[in-house]
Image (cartoon, rainbow, N blue to C red; front, side, top):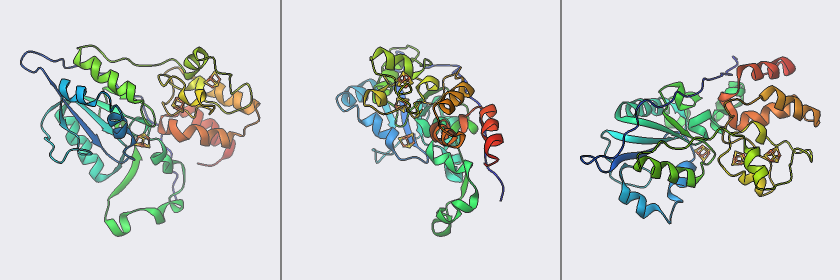
Length: 281
Ligand code: SF4
Ligand code: SF4
Ligand code: SF4
């Protein structure tokens, strides 16, 4: 049985951002799901107080999760939830990429592979019996984030993504502004909220290496950050591993915790540290 661990590159930045014009006053926006749990698409809809205003200011050209009739013509912006886990996902993604000017990876599955990509870290014999292919004929492929296959212009991370970040993205593009990105670690927002540091009390909080923008919502509620928004661009992951080891956590525990959401975006040198320590996938 072969090992399936993979390490992937960061997404490329946008080249051209469409703006509303006199001839195209409403941007054409689509929302699609590949393999995922639909939680990211629900986050769009959870803007219930704003949803009527949203459909006034953009042309929701396609949203198969909620609309019966969807027009798959050219899009200005297209949000994609989920990762590529089947041949059908791949064909859909490639077709959508050709039809949109800006492609937005919506949520952790699209961004890092997240939990559904976890099988890359285990042996096929551990999950083979669970594959749908036996009775559904689904042509399964190695689960991977979308930027493994197509260019991504923007990422709204998180599992699920914060509904306010989706709303603010749409408001920005309608106003002709470039949407905000976040690269400060969760700790910045956490400290601003005057939370007691969970790391200091021995909890395995990944806030120091995790991209903020969620207002440290988990820590505000007393739970450690599991890293669902992915790593910051300059995350010092080896230092994070060392810190957690000093707190008494094994490399195996740290590896499993970090892989949960950083998934296939874990830096190669960290995977090598883990592999050398455990001699396991
Ligand atoms: S990122 Fe989270 S909420 Fe979104 S599809 Fe994946 S598992 Fe579901
Ligand atoms: S609790 Fe976590 S996110 Fe908050 S300051 Fe400590 S390490 Fe950072
Ligand atoms: S605190 Fe961490 S796990 Fe919680 S939403 Fe923010 S990034 Fe995700």
